[in-house]
Length: 395
Image (cartoon, rainbow, N blue to C red; front, side, top):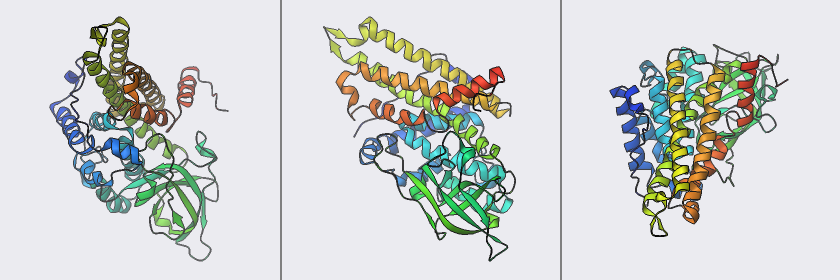
């Protein structure tokens, strides 16, 4: 059982930008992760099992919908606080952050922004504590980067004016195997996309688990299958429709990823730095050799640049001024940075870099999913390209 001695790295004194409340929130999340998650995360990854007993603790540290108003069970915190929590969770494991990110940005966020008052009061307080868990159904087997092409659909129930019938399937869905509800995006008979809250137990709704993953192994991934699921129209989120609705949810999630990826990079850097000071070759610590110092210097430089970028993005998002392309830039940059840091750190550890005694290889495998989901590296580059040129490369 590995001891977690991580203390943090702040090369450009970023803590000066944080309030005392921010620091308390971050430190509480870090302390919980060290105590409850770090000792068991390697076993969870090896057995490809999400430790569901952690859900209540995630709720207690405010990891579920921290920016949701207190009236709906949230903590009413700002966007920086949300980012700091995501950073601390992913510093331990991307799958852990994914669970919290999905719950916060892809389930609670759309219910809060697009749901009825009744839906908010029914779901949000229980989601905030972890008593209820949700998942987000957008990606389909044949439609990932092109979500607008989805074929999942619902039609009017011919036998009841109050009901609809949902059919289709979603794939690569985090939390699906154990989620109590799914926020699902489907087309109506006119082809307009709407969000629906589908509850476990509805006849025709199943969530088979996907296995055989070499990435995000400590996160449960599954499918959502809808076979003539009959549900009330009141389960439709009423306040927004169209593809823009789920894309707003993805903006929130991508923002959390931008912070989380920094956490993964910091953990890899911390591991490599400590190893370089302790591992002796040719009569001195390997950290005394120029090439190893080059790697470490480049790691902390890129981490620091990502920290500055993301903190500014958090300020803009709190002010309601962050744009989707800005969020795309931060997500793409930070995940790419974290992957590079993880790969360099793995090389510094040599053969030890691939064993579970150290976290680096697990981070590397996880980040291979993070660089793909919620917008691939290339898709985010095209979003930036379209923003700076005004020309659409998607069509």
